[in-house]
Image 1: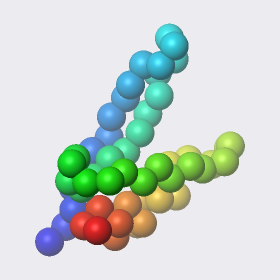
Image 2: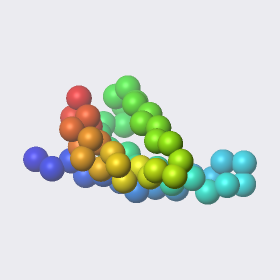
Image 3: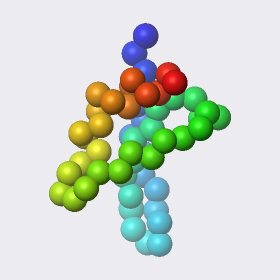
Image 4: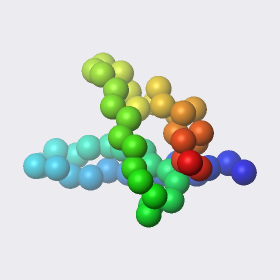
Length: 53
């Protein structure tokens, strides 16, 4: 089964922040941080692997 990744935006102190999420919303969360000028795109293969756990 392929895990669906959602692409979302949230506004924080007047700034729009993009994030990706997947998995059960009631499960514990993991925040994957990347360094500038990298992008969350580097986690595109990792997120589905972690989402089921």
